[in-house]
Length: 91
Image 1 (cartoon, rainbow, N blue to C red):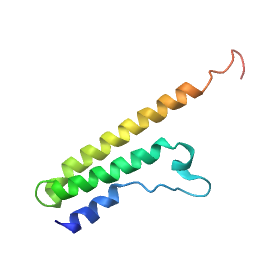
Image 2 (cartoon, rainbow, N blue to C red):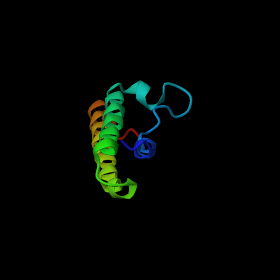
Image 3 (cartoon, rainbow, N blue to C red):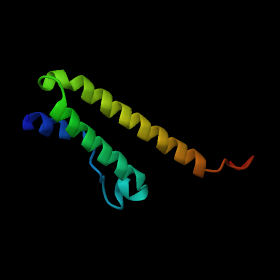
Image 4 (cartoon, rainbow, N blue to C red):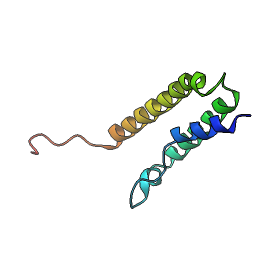
């Protein structure tokens, strides 16, 4: 088990709080699942991934990119579902 790899991969997990207030994860509870999934996925890649840190970087970047893309698409869909279009001439 290479703890140095796991420690380095932990840097890819986003910080759940940014600034004052409830933070990113406080407003939408499903984002806690995204954070948990990302942390567990990176842990699994770190423990079972091939070779050294350089060889495991491609699976890590692919996994993180895919999780961020899906999370962003879910956020956009949630926003579009809850937001009403402005009335005509309401400028």
